[in-house]
Length: 230
Image (cartoon, rainbow, N blue to C red; front, side, top):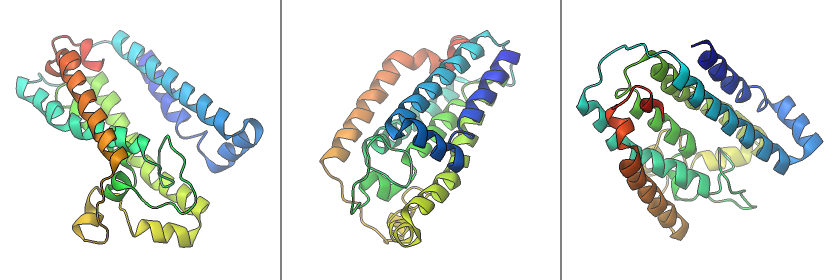
């Protein structure tokens, strides 16, 4: 358990300290933005792998006995999680996390119109979906911690985007999207305009979900306590 808690602590520290404006600015100034992003992504993946390995080694301490129906929570929510993550990473988004840079004259695409933090919402849904079907201490700490970390990152990214874009640009973009998914569409402050890349991202998310069902069903039904964290 000690190794698992250490891995979780290191993962949280890596997502709190380097993104701090003074530290992030210093690192980008020394090594450049592309290398910073590559190194930071590599560090995140390495720490995530350590968490999984440490979780498998940690003792299994049951909190409740997962019922078969609880696996359906993940089955129902994971398509939405995949969709938010895939579409969010593929679409330019200067307001949050994305793999594509936003050029001059940025106009929010479909997924950013739905929510300005799609990737974070995807991870939150993923984490929440796996808590009911995994009734042990390690799973609760892991998935609960990921949920809280993603939720806490939203105001941090909002402040960073506001600082980088400037108040005027921030206010203009903020009117066309929202933190809460679909809120700006329900209030009719913006209109959803699906395009080709959005359709491709949706298709990739659907394929990823079916792979998840075919290859990861043992995780969902909890056939093994160790497999629940895979």
